[in-house]
Image 1 (cartoon, rainbow, N blue to C red):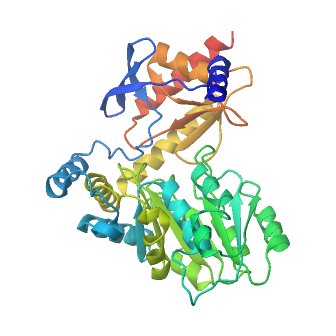
Image 2: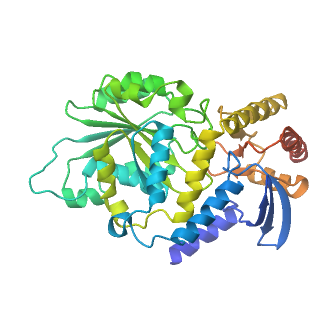
Image 3: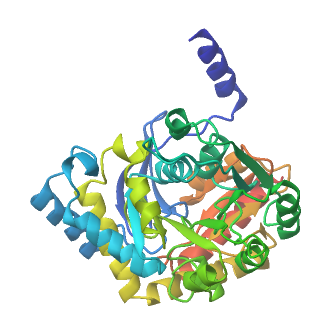
Length: 421
């Protein structure tokens, strides 16, 4: 523990350790936040929530969660293989499958577990069978800026639990430059062997850059490798992009069936913590066999199933999105408005989605910038200071008004002026 203590002391002194706040109350876009180090409370207009469609406080969503508790209790207390699924699980899987246009879906507690289960299952299968042996290696291509849940899963894909039991062949992981399809093509040409099982995995919308993966060009490249698999992590795409909020396929006007017709197997990971007012994740595919395989993967068998109120909240949220596409249209309109206002005031906002990263001049510290805005203007945004290009991370939602977005921009302008003196 001495090494941990020494490291943490250095981290505290460096100023890199994040500030911690306790939220006592939420109403619309306003939160009551306590700074536990001082005990001081702030009423803040927030631009750092991922509740992008404002459904967390929806009466219908809250009612669904409460009714699920009365019917099933607060927990299922075991995994679905041992104690059976509840009907809400089946309904949620069917709703996601309809929303993503992929017929088979499996639920997980979170995206990290979903992605790990997918890598374990796809690369190493599950239960050892005496009369079955796989001899084909797996090649995984991953964008260098993929979310941590993807990176964690793929970098361990060659030594995870599945391989311990099944002794499956080698898994090779090759990163490619961010959204660089030419580099992707080069890496595939260089590393793919004739009998490889090929998987390409990418965020659909990148959580720290706010940009969108070049799906059409990626498919053009994969078409040269028949039988390959493409995995899209739609955590920040669901409910946010595409005419109906369906995600990256909706955005580009491509159906998963068209992808399958080109000899490529589409897989989508959906998460519920952004657009669906809940928690958890799901993997969807055309392959029933893959989804059944995930059900017996170590990640599923060893973990409790999605709790009833969480499942019910996600289910009602997705129904609300599908029935009310105007929520998505409001979000997209707000995104365009805020991005235009930031550009007008000469802030460097990168990306193109409701995730709006703002790069500051090197002399401005994002942490100090965000603290100044909180203490002086009552506006809460997320400072990101521990990556290559420190930034402010702003998330606009369907609940924000133009007046609130103007308030944010005015506070940012005033803070820039104050801290640049």
